Image (cartoon, rainbow, N blue to C red; front, side, top):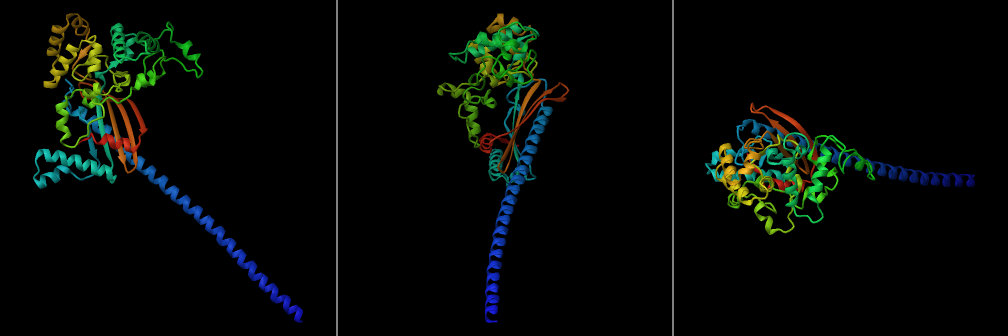
Length: 407
């Protein structure tokens, strides 16, 4: 009996030990499951938050595009210049707080109101408490339409413009005449040339030649000989400053605006500053050049590197946006030969039909950029021809916002 009792006590002790191990194992398994579940929940929460922030930023960017369309509809389509509202970099805050109302209640001066808007915009953008958008509008008539290199009227004139533009970039390993031929081969409809279907199909990663009008200026990257350096350059071209003198920008700096790293008047101070073709070529335009908005590089290409004529136009439109008749007289006096080509062939204008709207929306840590190209008729009707959505680094968007002119 004593032996039997001993074994019963030992078995009970063993059962308690096993039960303890089982409990510890279950607790360990539950801990792992709970930690994994907690991690999954946190990841899902971050994914949901990022999705929410990106969606809000995207809608803010879309709102910026439609705000840009609104500005263009309010503008007089009879003439376009760089002093109009649409040509100014604009920022909007998508909430109900009105800095104008705050300014009115505190009886601030007009300069203080502008500064208040700017500071309010940057403060809200930095905190990320409300969605904001930066809007930049650039007319496409300030650029050279590469689709005009083949077909249409005066293709030889457009070829010379593009060739001069490339020559002025002064890249040692580039042959401008050959590059222009390659672009013309891409947009023409025949197979006569050195860069046609057979060339592109023979590449290690073959693709087809367009053999028709380009649908996006980024198609130039597919053309034989067009390098990233040639296309993008080494620094972004600040289009919003293309018609402004240094003194005019200094006035805006007083309101807290930030000067770009390489403004047009600073290019000679930076030997590495190279503006790429993407800044001066387009595939969406009427083909005419708006001399009220065209940058100096385009004016030099059009006027065969005549710096006197190009600078005269820049100076005239800075003082007073040039009217068509005044522009014609200026060209006729400077170069009668060019007058016959440009004016009588209808290659110049002071009116823009196509516009590029770039809107960068930002909310918290998400930033989305929407690029749209629209056309506007004399009746102020608008049609969208191009739409592109891309995510951008938030810090880049913040840098852009330092230039914003808040409404």
